[in-house]
Length: 338
Image 1 (cartoon, helix red, strand yellow):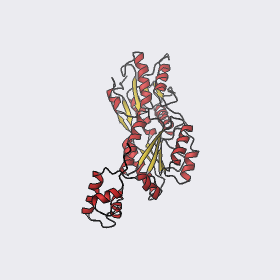
Image 2 (cartoon, one colour):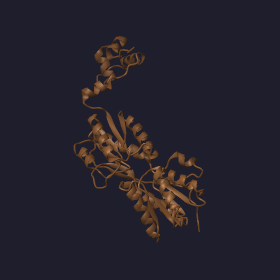
Image 3 (cartoon, one colour):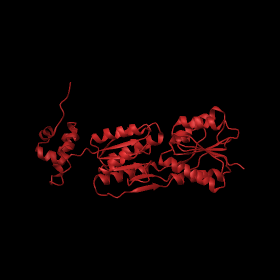
Image 4 (cartoon, helix red, strand yellow):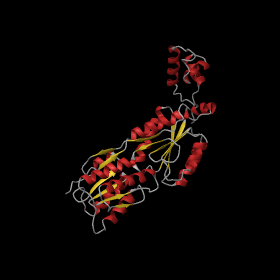
């Protein structure tokens, strides 16, 4: 049986107050119309007793605002993006917005289709980690006035706000740490090659090696997936001279790498050291906890949502572009060698 939805008429009857007074209290205008605390409480008590659910859809039709923002990430299978989507969703709720979360699957066409569908649903803003280097449709939405903030991945040459980690510094710090611990035969397993974070991480790795006078090294791989980490590690282990250390550019790549090493009974760090970009709680529960470059995910989320809400409210139209400092977290996966 379908139960009739409770409306403000029911609350007015229950509280003994006018429909107008009830409407003003429930819409947050009690102070504006000087409605007494006692009357406000009577209305709230009646609403709670009747299990009243506000009809935001009707209110949105009237105001023309959906109070909805879109969040699109490259893959919810990737623990980093799953965590950041969760953090963004929580932060969005703090500003009394709701979010629609999309997963582009590292596919530009899927990303474009999701964007089209979300925009047609009257979103007020977009937070996106673009999956590739095709930015035309994102640029067009920005020029049409849709508030947009990029996170993690971004376009260096576009005047679109973004919040990310200083990926170059993170990779440079990780590589220097390996070199300081005696490693010179270092392999780097990268992710999606055209993404800005990957390019900057590879650049940080290469320049740290060059600065130390090390000219021989491997940069392999093409995806931020477990499978990529697994297959590329398998190939590295077929070489005559094995690396003494492997630097994986995401924790998903690290998982595949660890699986391949385990299958060959190669111990971490006794036989090969491993360091990774991105932190996740499960890294501490591995047989050998992984030393990693941690990104300030919570800060990225808070700043991105703050930028977006400010742009939605037209209170700040500056093109804010922020890179946050990464942190090297030492665990047990890097061995010092002579």
